[in-house]
Image (cartoon, rainbow, N blue to C red; front, side):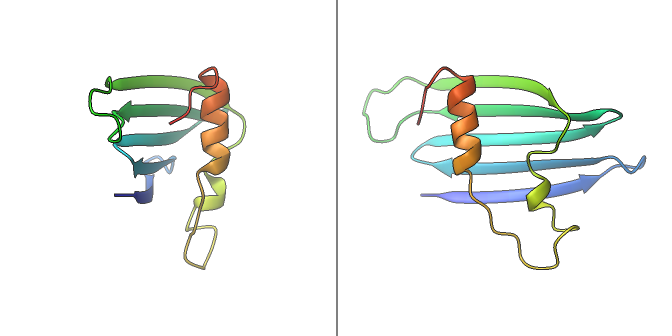
Length: 104
């Protein structure tokens, strides 16, 4: 079963946070972005096990980095009046590059 979701939140100091989650084949990939004074803190989480392999090992990988731009800016419904549609292909590629070519 495959599912995707995105959410945007604003705290009392008018700072925003974004999150995008994709679930597929027993794995969950999540990208969380939090606005800070001088940019964005990005957290990538990938976890789960391959449903296709009977005895697959559970994988849990976390990465954090600082960015001057928001990788989820195109998915902010406040900035777009139309319904948001997105693809994680670009993020998948970035995650794969950051994790040494590991793909799921």
